[in-house]
Amino acid sequence: MIRKVGLGVLWTVLAALASAPLWLTPPAPDVLAITTAERLEGDTWQPVTLPEAGLPAGQWAHYRMTARLDELQGRHLFIPTISQRAIITVAGEEIADTEHRTTMIGLASGITSLVPLPPRLLRQGDNTLEVHLQSMSLVPGYLSPLYIGSADELTPHYRDRIFLLEYLRLMVPAGQLLMALVVMVLWLYRPQEALFGWLTLLLVSSMFIYLGMMRDLLPRLLDVMPYLHMLGSSASAILVITVMLVSGLSPPRWLKLAALLIPLLCILLGLSDLMPAPQLVMFINAPLNILGLLVSLGITAWAAARRVSEAWLLLLPLLLAVLAALHDYGVVTGRLNGPIFLSVYYRPALMIGIAMILMRRLGVSLNRLDNANAYLTQRLTEQEQELARLHEEERREAARRTLSEERRRLTADLHDGLSGHLASIIALSEREQSAQVERAAREALDDLRLVIHSLDIQDRELPVALAGLRERLERQLKRLGIRLDWSMARLPEIAGVTPSQALNVLRILQEAITNAIKHGQATRISVQGSDDDGHARIDVENNGLPFPRNPDRCGAGLNNMRRRIRALDGRIEIEPREQGTRLTLWLPRQLPESSPE
Image (cartoon, rainbow, N blue to C red):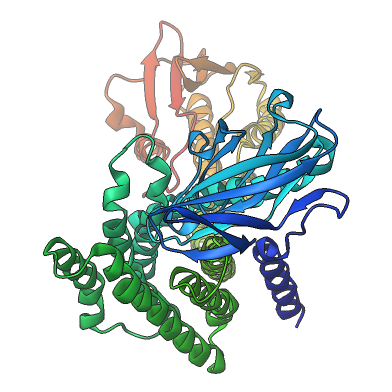
């Protein structure tokens, strides 16, 4: 509702502005008005009353007026409206020629003039003024009443007419050219939109009538102005096509051909001398233009009745354009007086209607784009949530598989470690060797604690597991009288630590120390951590017997150590010394994600 009220107010204001030339007021009553004159007909002067219109187009008309003046200084002659060109003389001497000013011909006819009257040519009492009027192209001659007064009295009226009759006319083609360029750019970027292409042709073809502005640059332009009007008549068919596209109708092919053939046939007919070009324009092209406007108005009214939103934006501009075209045709044919054509003033309303259609389509496209973006954003959010849910499920499943794998490995470690100790305990119990049973039971308990402690190890907590191993080894070695030197201060951080990997490291170190006690008979054991060229290095060195050259004599312990180090993606080196043995363990700074067995 608010939108319709706003459009109504807008079109009312535009209609009032476009009708301003019809409501121009004459100067104040205290200004001298000349409403009677004599027109030269043949060799005699005939009295006439001003304004006078309807004189044949393309001819000269000569007027003589008498003005009684009491004040001679600062007098100005103001002619509100002239058809096109006027030469003004006082006492037989020319004082002004409107041809020397920038004017427009054709449908932009009607100019104004304010001329200072030289005091040297004036005298107290009656003064004779002459106006030689020339009309060009299709415009009938017209001369309004004349006014004589001071500059302060006449200048405001002159400026109003200059704005309406000249400046505003220049603004219309400039605005139309700018809009044509904008629509052409839209068409180039969206060639699938037929409406943009036809709008471009409509705006360009309807500008041929403005070429009369360039008659000073092209002196012979006046000779071809009727043919330019014929070319411009293609706009009538193009307007019907445009209105049909706006109304959602498909233009027939013959109508598209008519937009090209009608002006060409008229031009050929004019060149063939079968009918003068001005008469072709007046009796064929002008009626066709009016017919095109009427058909466009009918289609638009039909579409508006069917609630086509864009049709309402063109309905009032087309109605105003039809009324202005009928008025102008009446002026050309002499049925109405006045040289001012209204079509040029109502054309901006039609351009504004077209611009509003383009802006509406742009707004609708932006709304659709916003809705599409909102829909895609919602779908993306839903997909992200779904992916997050699936990722969480996958993470849980991976954690479950990892935990299951860790349990399997730890179960295997428990089986490999405890089963041997328990078997020894059973065998010793059967032989009633209580001391050995106690020792085997302690070893089984230590092994179980080692496994249980490794279950609490998290990533990057290998030093915690090593600290726990050191605590248990110190108590065990102290009972045996063996000295333990332990330092992990320089061991770099190791990532990717899992309970099974921590247990593998602890098993390797435990096996190395156990071998030093059982087979090396060592009395001092040193365990040192360090950083070796980007790898974590742990050295286990003892002062016992050197490691045998033939490792087969050491049983399955060494094979278990190598199996575990392969699971850690590291390596082991055992080096016999002159006194004792040194085992070096290298670990990567990032342990593998899984440890194949």
